[in-house]
Amino acid sequence: MFAKFRQKLPGPKATAFWTTAATLVTVYRYNKRESTRLLDEYKQRASHAALETIGSLDTPRKVHVYVAVPMSELGTRRARQHWEKYILPVFAAGALDYEITLVNETETENGVERVIRGGVHRLVADEIKDRRRRQLESEDDNEELRLWRAALDERKAENERRELKNKLGVEPGMSVFELWKEKEYPGVMDIVAIGRETWIEVVNGVSDGAVGSLNVEIPPLVPLDSEKSSTLELAKPEQTSGSEQAPATEQSPVSEQTNTNQISGSDQTTHMINYDRFDNHSMVALPAVAYIGHKNLTGWASVPQRIFNFFHDQQNVDEYARQALQVVYESTRRGAHGMEEIEAM
Image (cartoon, rainbow, N blue to C red; front, side, top):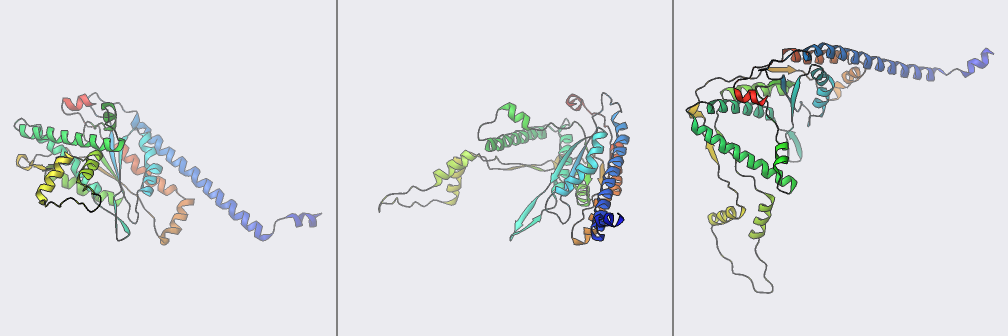
């Protein structure tokens, strides 16, 4: 009897295989359960911040999240997965509103694609500089700057309308145009930088925006697709049949450029608005900057660590969720300044 039962037992190799498979599945399931439990614990702690009352003159809590391309990458896919897995659940549990900007600028040179750095720096600096310009425009004796601001806003709105028309192919209505525009946040949004590369660019951008030049150039009009096609048709020489050909006429480059501009109907002239001569070096409210780490494991040397994280991810959940929880509790509610911010709330 025992001899027959022993013959039905699996062999040593089959036993080793199923034992290893069961062990790996058990460790993986245990890691998923513990990671979920740990993340739920941080979400429960963050939910207390969602129950705080907001004053009638306080702006809602909101942060601007910047994500740049990690080192040794050509896209923001891994950084976006890091954000969605570890940070976003804690922000949502703490009722912390956010605006995320993924900066991915690349160029191809000699068939090799590479990342262009400095996009986050430029965005942060431009935002702070624009706040400084608006502070100068609000002063009573700077009527000239207010007029230039109206011209600049009108040109930007016209360019947005033209870009939207090029995308849709028809003239956009006001309802579509208003839905396309994003509503501005009434106040100063704090900044959250994910990763070392983003952190460096954000800090440099804040420094540049606080002390850099305020001069701004009025952009030229964006040409419409219909204007481009009409320009090409009018500029194309007429083909004659047989041996008869139209006599060639000489035309100077200046007159040719003038005719092209007249055909296109676009104002390509630019003007620089000199804000620096009105600058009194008064400081504006700067955003607070928070850092959340991102260990981007790339290359063959990181394969053992990535395998270990696949079966034991609790330490990453604990580290990144704790940093996100700190951002939730330290994000401030800034009081509204002026009737414009109060009406925009």
